[in-house]
Length: 67
Image (spheres, rainbow, N blue to C red):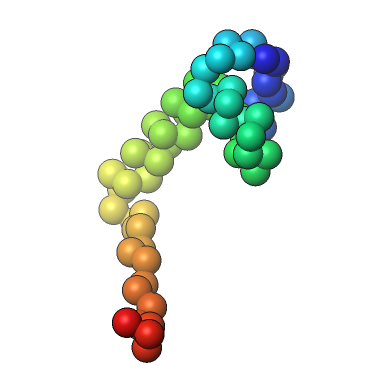
């Protein structure tokens, strides 16, 4: 299966029988990101976390009257 990275537009080939290929075929909302872009984003995110100015906010639980 030929896939295209959403960030750098690099074309790559992945195995047709891999779980990633199945996920991309069956769920069109899922997108492919090459390993280089994935590593770059994770590295920059870790750098932002190390500065102390980057915060992740927890999901607020919605109180439901039905429970």
